[in-house]
Amino acid sequence: MYPTYLARIASTAERACVMALDRPKDPQAREQLFDALAAVADPTFQADEPEYNHLTELFGQARVWADIVRTRIAGLQTNKLGHPAVKAVQYPARDLLPILGDLSRELGRRNDA
Image (tube, rainbow, N blue to C red; front, side):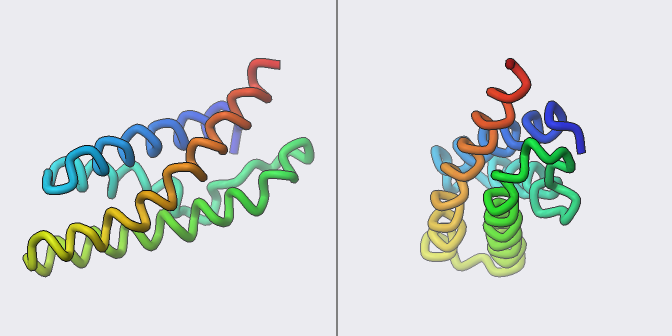
């Protein structure tokens, strides 16, 4: 994928993650996060150019955490337990947020150069 496209995906997912963490009980925020993470969880979410090889592991971590968050959101939609289940989404989303931020910065930095 093109780095500018990857940067846009990462920053969109990062913003959705922040919104879902700020409003944990808002089902629309979780739905937007679920949708934004679809592209991050996709196996093609990686840079093909050799100059981005140092980000390979970061892309892999982002895909794994995005898949975990999406699975937890899907489980929350089918299981209306309330507050404890919402925390099951919050914890992995907090772990995913800095990874998305790092990707956004690194890809943005490379595009600006």
